[in-house]
Length: 227
Image 1: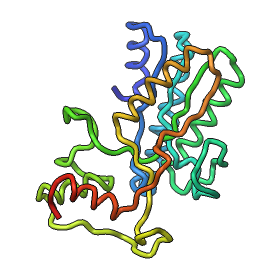
Image 2: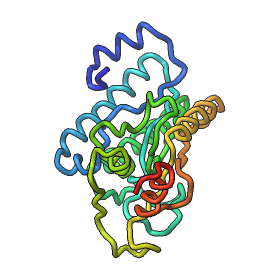
Image 3: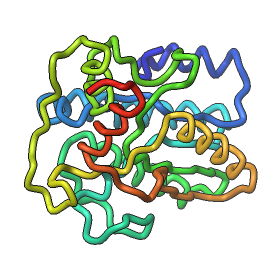
């Protein structure tokens, strides 16, 4: 269902009763957002406003929102915690997540019957053991591990690593990666939190440990037995 299709959303909320909404819908590629900023603002911002209005009209005032650590912008300190300043976003994708967070916080402040949990993802990776959900190495990659996976299965000859002079142990970029199954568990925990009439709460979803590009490549080499 298209989040911009207000009629379809109305029909859905009329047909079913919901305790809460987990809001994943939106565009999510950082690089693409720089090329197509209006698409990201239209889908992510307008879509969220429409969803919130329909939720309000149907008395559904519990929300889990899929946000992002990109709302922090360039880190002022590490590790990042929820108290770190936000809004210094460096791309339209991150800005759209920041603006939505502000909308939801304002809504919860204005109407105390609303409850929301904002989950700031770091770098989701991996797939469910069934292979039914998560990153698909057969698809078009837009994150590190699908590229690495395609090299491992022979779809690509080599992996291009951009940058070897970062201020890290091996000179390559470091990211905090979280497995998609752990991410899903975080959403279940957020739903439980909503039952406490929690107001607006914010949580980072990450491991708190960073891994470099080369460390991730070495992990795949070990798991796959391929160089």
